[in-house]
Length: 360
Image (cartoon, rainbow, N blue to C red):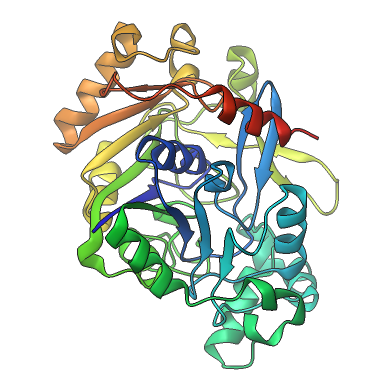
């Protein structure tokens, strides 16, 4: 049995969706699964400078032969789910939803938008938190109650374990480790635990099938809303704009209609990173947004092409954590990846055509 779990380090927005999709491509995964959270994350990638995103599905949908599954630990927004399925021309043969998934309703979303506490913590207002609360109270509808979802229903734990026996599968996490309700800085947390054990449990995967736990770590960690960034200095918005490394939140301010600039740390807090590794049982790290740390590494796809500055950062991380950095993300495009395994398969023309077909 062989399964990889890709988890977000720190506070999310570190490109774990792209890392997960790349790992699925690298290992010729038979399936990519989500097992926690709901329609709150935004997992996206750039294709020929066009941004393609999903909120409900994992990014592994880009691979034609790869099954997609939403485990019973995932809250499902039927509106977003059906939109994404239609938008990317997916079929029930490819996408499966466990009948026990809690359902996010329009009322859940409205209640979050009206909640001052949710505004204070930088919520995405996806309705996931209230849907999960209703599930805990046993009053939430579940996927088997929704007529439009009937063609997609399946026993996702059985599917995931069956595929893991045949070949590789990937589990795609959500948010970031320090947004976990168990391990984050309460109340600045999400509604569920988002560490690797919970992702596996939310899919229903036999934990003995897990081979690698890969934590995606941003070279310059960012955070939405309030809460600490660790024992490190923080960029001002003016500094980020001057350096050209500002990132705009996917969350729209309901009062101004504007996207805020994400807060950004000037370095990685080693003590926090070691805790992330401990909580997730990580044995590999993926360093993402390296081009913001050193613009000279932009677009590099060979490990031998990494700059000295990035190599020094990798060495410092590995010395501090005793965990290997196995992959470096060097740009916005899907294939801007450098791996220690320089014999990785090239992105085929067929996959490139498929990716371009998703551009609106």
